[in-house]
Length: 394
Ligand SMILES: C=C1C[C@]23C[C@@]1(O)CC[C@H]2[C@]1(C)CCC[C@@](C)(C(=O)O)[C@H]1[C@@H]3C(=O)O
Ligand SMILES: O=C(O)CCC(=O)C(=O)O
Ligand SMILES: [Fe+2]
Image 1 (cartoon, rainbow, N blue to C red):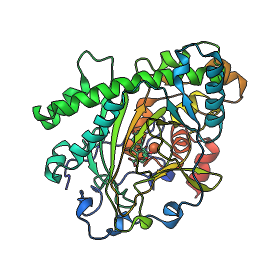
Image 2: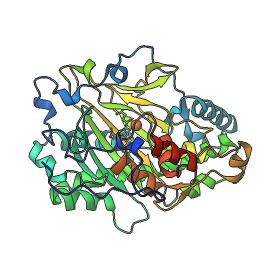
Image 3: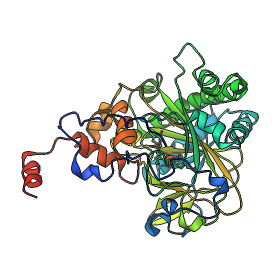
């Protein structure tokens, strides 16, 4: 049981205490469930904390979501017609469900395979070994089993390993993370993920160019520059087979708080997007990567591009792996849409905020779920005198 004191709750910038309405969502600081760690591969059935309400674990109800596979190579090969097509595909997908897949991304197939294999290499270690990398409370880096160190209910049927990536750093931060946390034997694994993250960053900036073009941002390079000095998060998801998959979830319904997610999934399948009330699978396309808009980019587009609800279901027979690269702005950058976009749709949909504050909100005060950005906006915005009076009268 993690006995380290819970991190001090970050007080809302303009309020003396946490807003009671957010309190119910405050991440449990009691060290999570009775066991702060589970060995999911040895659970004979699913313990109660893993059972999700039917409303969230409801069955998959519809056919696959037909997300476009966008050839991002057209940004570099001078194919003008191809570029127009790619821009139209991205505009249509991002304005609706926020998901598309990319081909022509320049990520070597061998590197993608090595990154997925490395996930097997880590998650198949004995639990005690994995626990050497356990997550540091209040941060996002490290190993977790079902987030049992943070939450006491609705535990996801997954193990995760997360670490930061900044390519502005002089040192290879990912290699250093693996060797400093797990030892020199893990340097080869660190090198695979170092190279993988560098490629993910390159691809993220390429996709930012497409998003700029599709949004008609007048200053070419606006988003590319905004994320040039990004500080991103790499997350390896491992979903063991589950004895009762219909009662739990690998990852619960949520919108990614980050700006852009690049997801490499293996061929098992399990990612689903909520569209018009139906959970629609996103089928793995060999060689392609799944891209989705996150809350932070939805704010950067003043709500024009959608950060949408998605989840990951598990199954009884096969383990599943997915590698999520979360592009995040530099911590202190103010998230604000470009002037032309802000002017086009009045009023501003979201207040200015920094990624540092939004990240801390998800790590210390609120479990990212179906309304994270709205809850954060409410938390940031001081209550009006009328709201204060009403709250005091209640
Ligand atoms: C800022 C973050 C919080 C989560 C990781 C991430 O870097 C981006 C995605 C977030 C998450 C995956 C959304 C679903 C709920 C969550 C708790 C999870 O299932 O892992 C979220 C991550 C978190 O560690 O809080
Ligand atoms: O594993 C998946 O398919 C999705 C995971 C996800 O949405 C996340 O980690 O944010
Ligand atoms: Fe997600």
